[in-house]
Image 1 (cartoon, rainbow, N blue to C red):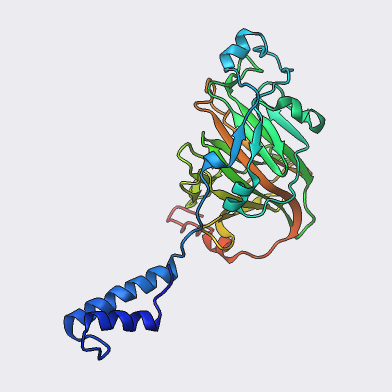
Image 2: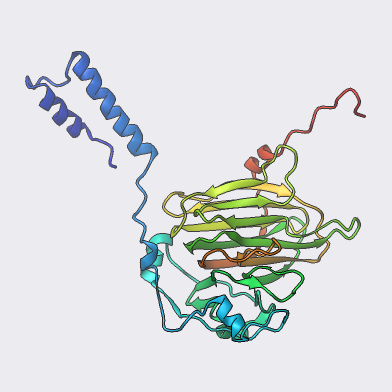
Length: 347
């Protein structure tokens, strides 16, 4: 909405004050002035977001087929207990680049994963990506991740759980004073819950503690994206919202990690944020590896016996991983919880 001009005000005042002598007087004038002030405040504080293309316009599907999970098991295409699953093709997804860029801005170069993990086979190299189009595809600079209702990880009969499709990249721990930065833009097409990004580390070599992931970026089935701290400290919240109602809306996520214990997360919701917004920070056990792993895609497989509840699909664009000079973040410092006051029995 455009704020009213002086001419707008004079025209309106003349309409309600037929003498044409300018400003109205009395209660009528006060009410009119209050109304115009409300319009000005609203127009300045809440710029109108650009129109978002509906999800149905962001892609087309076909040719190809997507058999149900049970059909794949019944036909022997998926073998329960086998860690060497066979490649599986699926319907072709063609991205409408013009519509997608209307929502998220220019889609430029993106970093490809070195390998992908699925729930029937892990460590699939780049040269085989096209054979696994049921779960992972690339169209230009857009990476397409899909899971289907009922799917489970059946590689281990003693640990059956919901499926996954994750892209994988590992980089060295940054030099002292530098941090490693992961950045990418998510567009949720079919929300289904689960993890969108994991930062992976090794156990502390001295204590044997930690390992796996310090921080997650998760999606909920209602279209919300959140940051999840693995081990929040004292007053820290475990879950921090990145944004709600994000189906079809581009969300650029930036995660910085010092390679050892500390991370920071930022977000930019396209059409809502003009620049990156600080989401939260945290610490974890010392990384026992000399590298840092990143896994992005859709991961739902932590609860034994779980399965994919609904079909889900996510587009990811603009992936980059770089080593950067860390800039002091005052908001991250302000967020750190105050130490607890010592009680009478404390030493």
